[in-house]
Length: 238
Image (cartoon, rainbow, N blue to C red; front, side, top):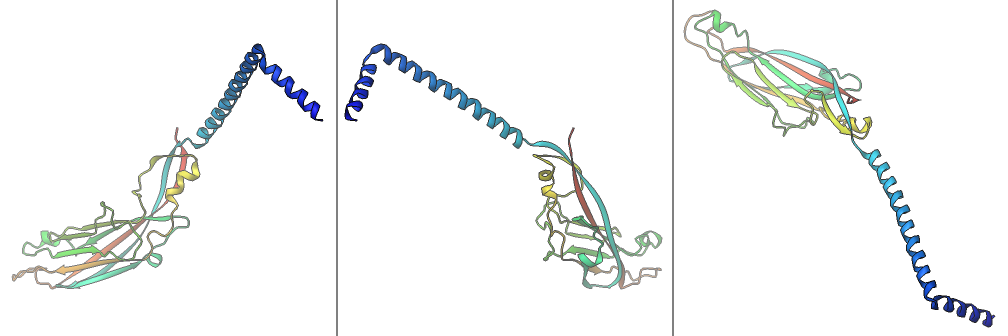
């Protein structure tokens, strides 16, 4: 057994002692390494291309199907009275199946603004309205909100509050890998839940003259709340 090992070792030593054999062996090793590297490179490039194709964002058209549920109340405020009116989102408004709460618009109407025209001595009452920041799940910090307003010229007061992040009701383009991911931003639950509180303050303006509407110490105020619901859909952009 030992003799066989010695013979094999001697043979290998003799082969590598020959200059030509060393050159051929080196060339063969280099060729093998180059071919292997090429094959590995081609394989990795193919895998990379497949990964890029799988991960490349597509253009999607996001469309909102919207609907509005509204509620109106009319109450009489006394001079210098401050009162808070509550609207329960899950009771006062009909939420369609599969829709989300996008935003809330509030319009405050004074009593018969035409009085200032029909009665020259009458004066418009000063009304202020505020959406109270509370536990209602909404985008309270959104810069586009209008949470407070006032008027003393018989004009309506417009207030609005965004509830769903980023929603403005306008269809738009988006980039995503597939339809599912394109719609992920528009499937969040829990927004627009709670109680909407609107505080109204009245300051009656009257004059000491005889006029059909000048001598009053109260005001009938109407509050209209419109809740905008939406359901998003996505289509491949052309």
